[in-house]
Length: 300
Image 1: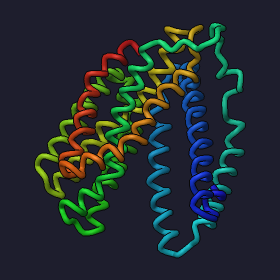
Image 2: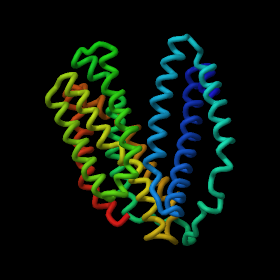
Image 3: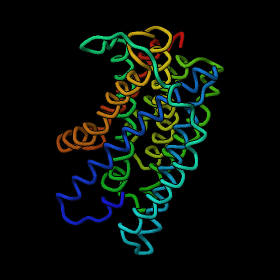
Image 4: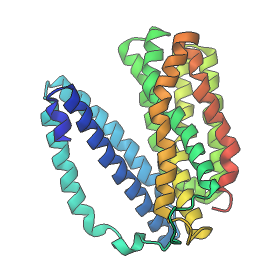
């Protein structure tokens, strides 16, 4: 993080962002794999709450970023302060982790790791959800400002509402999955998020946009925690000597994250041709199709 904050030149900025992103995503995969092991050993669901705290961190981080910018604190000082806090937290919680052996799983030896097709399918479910999530984050404010001519504060409301529902939905997803099963949660999440997203765009005003982002947050909030948990659970139960849970989580997260790279430029490209409002119907439709992927979470 301090390397990113130095901002010596454009090339340095690119390389430091790449290093920061690489290390952050590697840690992200490791944390999710650790959570899968914790769920398996405790026979309880925790993944939704873990991801809720991730979303809460994004909300708090954005608020602090705005405060630091308002106080004219340099990017380097910000990054140095955040890095110090993260290091302190990391070392303080290390004794609470499971032992390293808990995450190790025997797999069959061979020149290539076998990747059963079901993990590709689960990854695509995560990709559709990430596409919708990323589109809401990247384009909501732009749509509110450029299409509906909302004031700056009002233009920020859809994203704030969306992120708030992401936090609330993820905190409740573990309970909902235990109570109704992950398949039903994914089914109704896809229907609520997709119909709400499409309906808000078709109505076409700032208030319908806020409502759309509200329902989208409810719909997609549970998807990523559930698909990560499902990937690890399926690897443990169905393919114990074929693919390790950590590899399954890494594969699914890699497929899901690709939407965060491809999504913004795809929506932007389409927006130049059919307007942003109608371009966003593409990720909205993908969110709706999450309902079809809910069957993958049966018996998990």
